[in-house]
Image (tube, rainbow, N blue to C red; front, side):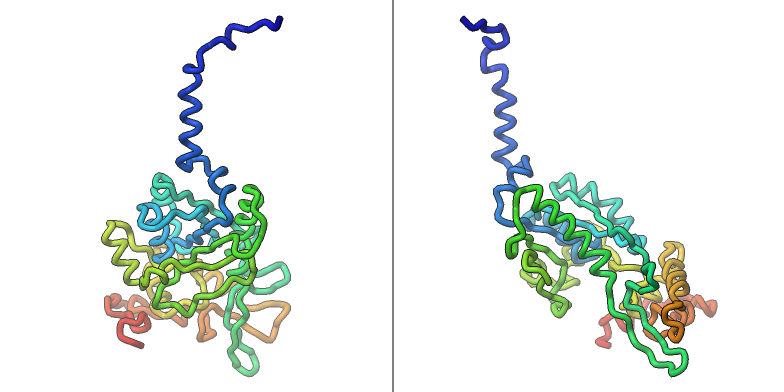
Length: 303
């Protein structure tokens, strides 16, 4: 006859609370692995810590929209100081409300590759003819899209999901005033979604919503030396030199000037194809103070 040990005779009541807790976690979605495995697709919020994407993250945290399965910040290492400060202050705030932010980074975030190829869409000027053109953009794909998709691919594999059409729903913070930025993904397994467009929200609507929740309104996100930046951004950056963003941009602009691979060209981050420090002038350059109405290319006066 098999001997029955004492612990085998203990009442089930001793273990029941633990089993109840296990079942409660599964039923109420605390077991994320089970929850995602049972899904046919996953939702991913691309967080850049700018106005629009932060609005989406905060809305999810405050249960005004559904929570995405994954929130990803692709750190280029060249974001402006205010974006990193916002990330520092609000990553835990979001996490406490069920929105966990994962940060990814490309293997290399150098502006220029080892083959002297620029990854940013800098402006080039032919030294002999003075002709100005612009280099094709690689930075978004290398620094943002690729590392995000690498993480999403790993999550799909982890939860037993294959790269079937539209299996990953990528939430992008694009608003009605920039609808022209809407694009389909270039791979079949990713489907881009635009929740703010669905809610008919403009950038100003996002600002109004953030203010109504007593949340900070972020500065425009992006790399500090991005050649697509407008005059108002450059002037604001130069006026706020204590952040270090302006000096970072000036340093990059100077470092990319020449290339042994293309000796007939000079390269610049400003569209005028002149050194950044010369291209952007502010009243402080002449001993004056900044005007609060210096917003000519912001859209406020329809220019």
